[in-house]
Amino acid sequence: PDPRGSRIRVGTREFGRPHANLTHDQRGGYGASGRVEGQLEFAMDSTCPISGEYALEFGEPGLYSPPVRIRIKREPNDHQRDVAKYLAGYVSKEWEASNAKESAATGKALGVYDMSRLQSGLCLPDMPQQETANDCGFFILVQILLLLQLTPEGLRTLATLPADLLS
Image (cartoon, rainbow, N blue to C red; front, side, top):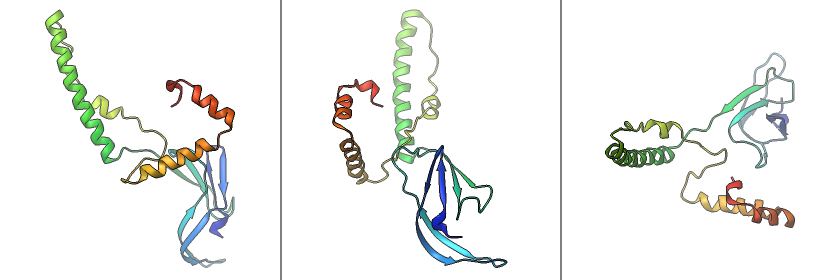
C-alpha cells in the first residue's frame, strides 16, 4: 500500500494526502512482507484539537481493519509543573495567613491547605505550547495571521467583545 493514500480522522473531520517522508520504502507483495519507515505529515488546520482520539487508516481506506486508534492526552511539561508547585506554595502561605486571622477572630481553624489540590487541578489549554525560548515569536505570527484572515465585520465584533468572552 502507498502511505500517501493514508487518512486520519479527528472527530468528524478527515484529512488525507499526507506528505510522506520515507526513510525506508521496500513494499511487500502477495505473500511477501515489506518494510516502510518514515513520517506522515497531515495538513490539519487550527480548528483541530491537539488532545483527543485520532483514527489512522494506513494506505487506502479499508485496507487494514480496524483503523489504528491514537489517544493524545496533554501532560504538563516540567516548567508547568514547577509553576503549579510554586503557585501551590504561595496559596498555602496565603491560606496559613488567612487561617491565623480567622482563628484569632472566631476561634475556629480552617485546617491545613492541601497543596496537591492545585497541582492536580492544573488545566492545560488544547493548543500548542512553547517549548523553546524562540517559539513565542512563531506563535505570535500565527495569531496575527489568524487575525488577518477575519473579515472586517468579524474583526470589529472581536474588538468589541468583553475580555471574559475571549477565551
